[in-house]
View 1 (cartoon, rainbow, N blue to C red):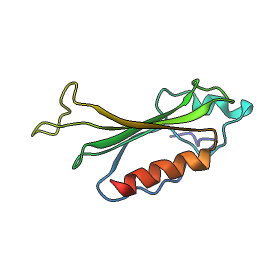
View 2: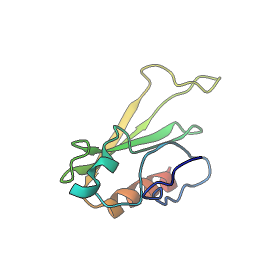
View 3: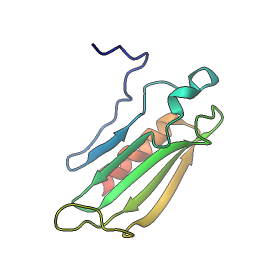
Length: 114
C-alpha cells in the first residue's frame, strides 16, 4: 500500500502534444522547512516530440531555500524511431526567478507558444 505524501503534485496546464517526462514538483513553497522537497536535480521536465521542443527545470543551488527556480529551454532532434539523436540539442534560453508562480507560468506559456 502506498503512503500518502505530505504534499500533492503541483497543478500544471499541459497542452496537447506535450509529455511531462519528469515531475518532482510538489504544491509547496520553497522555504527552509520544505527545502528537501526541492532537492532533485530536475524538478519538472517535458517534451513535445513533434517539434523537438523540451524543457528541464530545477532549483539552484539544489535544495537551497534562498535559491532560484531555473528553466532551460531546448530543442532536440529525433530519429525515425523516436530516439533522441546524440548531440542534437540546441539551447534556446534560460529563465530564472525566485517566484514559484512566475516559474510555473513561464513553463505553461512556453508549452502553449511552441
